[in-house]
Image 1 (tube, chains in turn purple, yellow):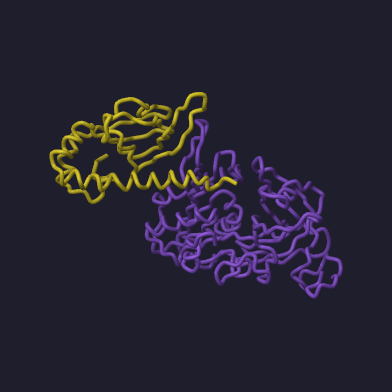
Image 2 (cartoon, rainbow over the protein chains, first blue to last red):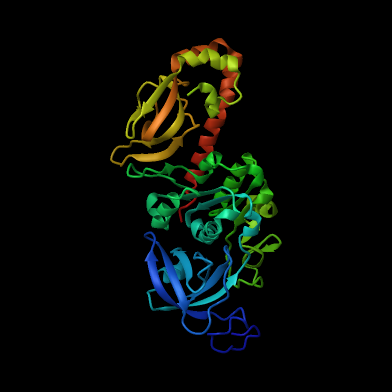
Length: 290
Length: 146
């Protein structure tokens, strides 16, 4: 439908003309990450691909006949021809996405939203903290940091999940952990004796990071309560709230700042975010039921 | 390893550390070794210098669960300070771990005989307790659950 309510032309190559039309993409690959999480690799079914994305941006993925959901792009920004999204089954739409078979078609519109301000990380130490499915939106950041490793100081990554079985990108994490120019810590909330990593919250790992707080920028992604307490832990280390960025999640519907579903105070998360400077949104993270 | 080099004692009166240092014992644990066992006498204050220690809960009919890991710069706990002075958890080295350990009875006597030092010691220990309580609260929220 066009914005005036009249039917629009068929989708396919109209992303430049209207933000409403999903462009058909083919599911090339479906990789099971955990029992309920998959990574989909998509390519344009026809026509030209969507615009390149910046780390931190999201697309609206449309399962025809089911509905549309906002999903962060989790692939490599240098490889825009392969659109990568990691999706966890949380409801009807995400369940349809995780069940999308190779060869099937989904609609894509985007990319939308602000990205992580990588330019602010140049010349500084960088801390990435991800909780649960917060790692996929941060993975493009890590690709960029490692591609231009010489531009940045120390890189510390802390990734927390519920159990070892809930860790996504498991093999890639082993590669990252093996690098000498990056410190990648994983921690889980609880584990059996077959787990040799850390157990505890990501906040518990913050006192251990090896950075110069005054020249550190931090990007946090995960459950909001996790980000709130992680930000507090970083501040206790001396990182200022203006150097901390968070990616917020709200119920995004239109993705272009019109419908108001994702409004957070004066901000629309889809348009003004999802990445915000913690200094600017911290007051909202303490408002009950907001 | 010296008491003064451990994060727990940062800023502590050097004179106090000089008196306590002769009491401390260096220990090394291999991966898999039990540092302490639930129900056993909590007879020492354990400062971890390097390595990784898993705090484990053993419950009947359930697999052993690790609820937290501790690393260098952290202390094992406070059961040694509170009656009945019995460990409440198992603590197992996940990898090679080096510690300095102070005997609990001597340490308690020292803290009781000099209440001002005892008070300052508790002001160091209380943030450890408070932080672990906060972590436990957050774990109870099942942050990553869905």
